[in-house]
Length: 482
Image (cartoon, rainbow, N blue to C red):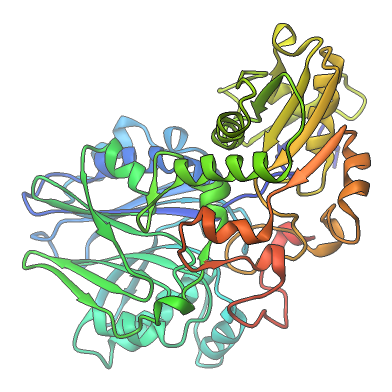
């Protein structure tokens, strides 16, 4: 085979979330597919490889599910004609995906639709199961045949199996959850119910919204704003909520004591949109706080504070507010380049970083710059951006990172790579500073994270190595670790 002259570029020096989920049940029997579509657009930052929508008509043939899914961004996969074909449907679930375990293929796109003895289930999942390999083997020994390589299918099978011996779908979900170990937020459509569930540690967010006579489940509250819905409340860690025409029922029997919960702190640092609130804490305010802490803990004389778009901007504003140094814009971002694009040839002069970002020379020339970003993974991207600022005439470049150094991999749905690929592993801060070419480097302190999350119990394993769940003994994380 002839080798392709170009390859798609994954922004491999950034951290990615796994997925976003969105579900709607409209009691006035309006079609929900357009609402789910706009909800997924609002959650696009959580996954850009594939997406899908599955709907059902609660007064139509029981078990009939209309589904469309494919590879690419939401507005690439769905046309007006596709949405029209998802009618009638007054209940449905949607999903956007970035793969952290399981290959990036159409077969692994969600929602998954399962036909079984009790009817149908459509399921969308955000997270990673630590014990997925054992659960998969258990099912395979019983004769299960898998169509995908994702742990979502393992969850669906266990719910379907438990449903045979349960009075309700909610009871089956609870039975399955007792076997699941790891991170998951689930949105499940049965013929007459919309169900949401969150793992007992609360790794991944999930909230409830309401618009007129429709209830909504969403990974983030910003998607509720997009579709004109009001925020009702967050789903509690360990809670199962069931939405029917009788209202919302809640099962909290799997909830842990609050001090044992372990929300992913990176939702607040980077993943979630700044206009989202998670468990009562504003993501924007959390990032402002991180910037203020950086200014207190790592002050430096400079002329301008700038953020690396988009997630570095709020922290840069916080740094500027605390330090009194003016906040400014140093980067112009190409909004029409997604996370994946055609990578220039190695010999080509085009830089994959410069395709996405360009420096405003008039803003930085002759100035001492404080550059705030959310993280350094392998260090290559950060080093290129520092060099771009210098080439644009910056006298000094001081880098401030609104997270502690990454030292350990994540097993709960975040694609932090193995330790040998992390620039901070085995290096001092001074060695990292030299590697990226900055005049100074300061990271957010580990002790600042609980303050950033306003006292919410959080998971800091990727920084501290203290995992709330024992890490798996075999690789569960798929392609991205290689």
